[in-house]
Length: 277
Ligand SMILES: N[C@H](CCC[C@H](N)C(=O)O)C(=O)O
Image (cartoon, rainbow, N blue to C red; front, side, top):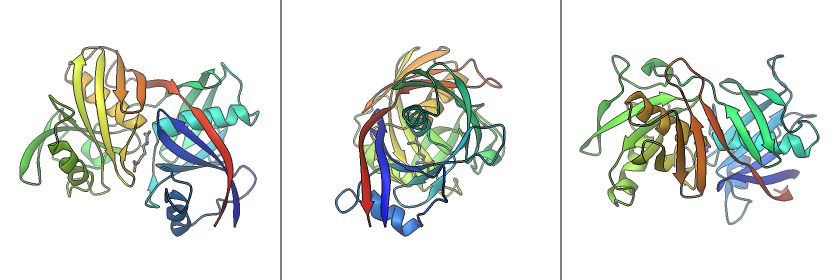
């Protein structure tokens, strides 16, 4: 198969973008894993398709797959890249607000510049059954046993499931063991993206994320939204927070429960290619 693609990234969270505006999505899980291989394929954290909308109120649909071939409901860095990709394809103007359909429902995007995008990511979902997370009632902290350590986590869905752990030191080696265990924890029946967040002050956070289906990433957009929302629910941060990940910084704005959350950051092209698999 000769599959044209664009390689993009949002602060180092990298994507293979496949144009399916005029044809069906052509890949199965095995082919997705082959493209994801960083030695024998192209390499990506997520593969993203751009397709006609299924919901008529949206301009385009985008599908999301992790490096292990599993689908996801949302991708924050990815949706910014979808917006920049649509701009390059002549489908979206700078300044225009447009609704895009993700697997978990609509989001609204606006290009601030050709490579800078702001996204209304919707209302964070806090009810355990909607994450999904096994717990009796909604809380801003849950105690959970992870490999013999009791951790206090926050949890919510941004269209995909997140567990957020506040830590004093993001460099602590123990995190590297806990990330994979939390991602596959039995209390998350569909797995979770595991974020470790260190508060610098009420307007700045540092974050590392071990992603479901892709492992440690340089950045996770929905993870940044989730970390900010968890700390905002505990009144530990203000309405505007800069979240710095290993690959760069995102700005997250959220007034609180019931409000939609906005994420702003870059979306960059690396190259155009053709996968010959
Ligand atoms: N990198 C993404 C999240 C990918 C989602 C994924 N790992 C999952 O939910 O399975 C982001 O920027 O939000």
